[in-house]
Every structure is written in structure tokens, then in C-alpha cells.
Length: 199
Image (cartoon, rainbow, N blue to C red; front, side):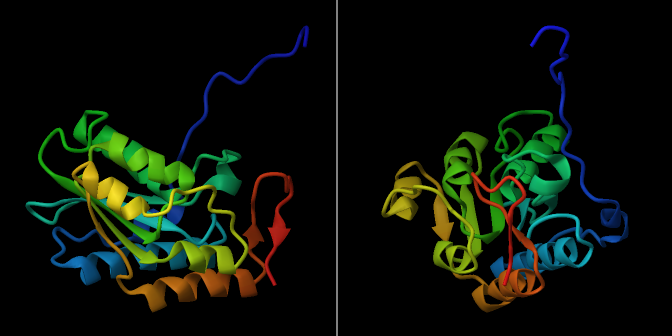
């Protein structure tokens, strides 16, 4: 490795099309928040700027949007750049703290149930609620490897004081996954350096 320079930084930058996203001042109810989040996933696919996943952090008290994230694995060349991780990281910047609950209770809304990595990040993030659209099985059905998640992960989060709601606008969320795969989107998993193209 002599003479070779190691990378010293990486960035997670949301795509340019976010400039045209109308940010709601507040959003009441799980379905309204999920509809906003799923729309982000669909735009990410339509613009070819990443995978079919999206997430957002909202204030629980006011319903205000704190941060958003879409899957940036391919454009950022970072296996960890999942939508939940991006939203949590940007929430830290917005709140001025690594703890998403530093300025009041927050929730994470994800277009698909978290993979093993993102599941581990949820309790560390400081959110008090997790709302999911498509299921783990839905993501696996189109070819994504969701990792080794413990059975009953929802109950495990609830034991840590995090409320879990699943299946919100599931059909809408699933349609983004299936459209992505049918359109030849990269089904990236470990060991597939160039990814595996969708059906």
C-alpha cells in the first residue's frame, strides 16, 4: 500500500431533485406521512438516483418534518447509505445533536421495514416511534438481502420504549419495489460488486 492514499472522507448528499420537493410544514397521521415518504422513494427510482427506499424523521408533537433520506448506496458508493441511515444522520444535523430526541420526541417513517443494519440504528437514533410501509418479506421478494434480523424484532424495539407500526400504505410501498425491479433497477447485495439487475 506504499504511496497509496486512503480516502479521508465521504459525503451523503441528497439528489438535486429534492430542490423541487414541497416540504410539508406539518403532517397529521401515519398515512399522510407515509404517502410523503413513499413519494420520495418513487422519485428516487424515477430519477435513477438510488434504490427504491425512503425515510423521514418527524416531530411527534408538531408533526413537523425534521429530515428526509433516500437510498444512496449506488451514487455514494457506500453500503451503509440506506434511507434510514441518511434520514437519521441528517436529523442530527438539523437538531444539532446525535440524539433525534434531543429537542422533543420524534418518529422515523420508513417506506420499508428496516434491514438488519437499520434496525440496529433505530434505538441508537433516539426516535420513540417507527412506522413502516412494505414488509421485510416484500423487500426480499424482489431480491434484496435484509440481513439476519431477530424474530420478533418489533417486540424487542417496544421493550426499548419504541412504538412500532407496520403495514401503513403497504401496497403503495410495495408498488415502488416491484416497479424498480421490473424496470431493471440494481438489486445490490453483498458479494455482487456490480449488483444484480432486476427482472
